Image 1: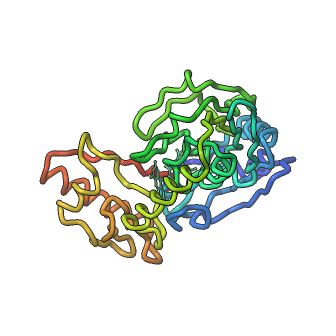
Image 2: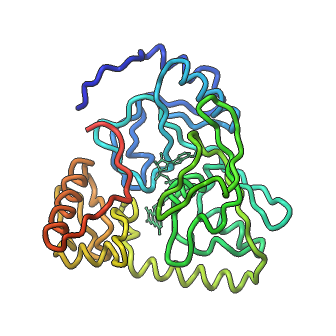
Length: 306
Ligand SMILES: Cc1cc2nc3c(=O)[nH]c(=O)nc-3n(C[C@H](O)[C@H](O)[C@H](O)COP(=O)(O)OP(=O)(O)OC[C@H]3O[C@@H](n4cnc5c(N)ncnc54)[C@H](O)[C@@H]3O)c2cc1C
């Protein structure tokens, strides 16, 4: 375990979360909040009631000099000793509003599948690419989530952010630098996203979504806990193909296993530790580099203390 000195006390933590209207849980096991079902505790997990609550939290955390980390939890590996300081989940911020001009506003905690379903119900096209992506709308902006059908950047019109001073600012898509699974945004917590969509036939949207969900079911290990793709695709090749060619399909350390359905997914067979997953992905990275000269870059975010 990392024994770095912590500059704050339990009292400081309590002061940082005082007066919030949302939920506050001390020593919250993050395995319960990640799709991998892995991860040690957060000193405190906060689920703010709304953007104003996020503002208050950010100001109070700053005053007490306590770090704040935000999670949706689906592209994340939390190490076994968890995260020190405050972890924020936007799980209570799930409102969607219809705006003029085929625009939807989603609070940051809205799940992508929910947003996509809402759009489909209104006959609005543009998010079909996201069928089956379990992240939050905010997390999908930050990661510029995408598939071969499209990316978040294709639909984002603007985002609402709580900045490090605890103030709400709005940022148009033109001010965000999107690249492959990455977005350079102003610092802060994304609390809302506007997406610009186009009218289309509901049946056509539903057909595209159904086909894509079937494709996912056929090619991805959706019945075991995982965190999506571990590595970014290197250049013009698919990371899964490169890892499979290196002989890693089915390889296992502890309860962490390279999926035998899709080699760029690591699945948790039951009681995998973050340390098992990290050992496995390090082994893959070293072998692929030795065999092909290709350095695989992580798509998965690894956070917390080992
Ligand atoms: C079965 C499965 C399939 C998947 N398929 C795909 C796919 O096809 N394409 C794809 O791109 N991804 C895929 N993913 C990965 C994942 O869903 C996306 O990367 C998604 O964008 C992550 O969103 P999240 O809300 O879970 O964020 P997290 O994974 O929790 O966080 C990702 C990063 O964003 C930051 N962050 C999260 N929320 C906020 C916020 N509100 N404000 C500021 N920063 C924030 C976090 O701190 C972290 O650095 C898949 C995952 C699973 C489990």
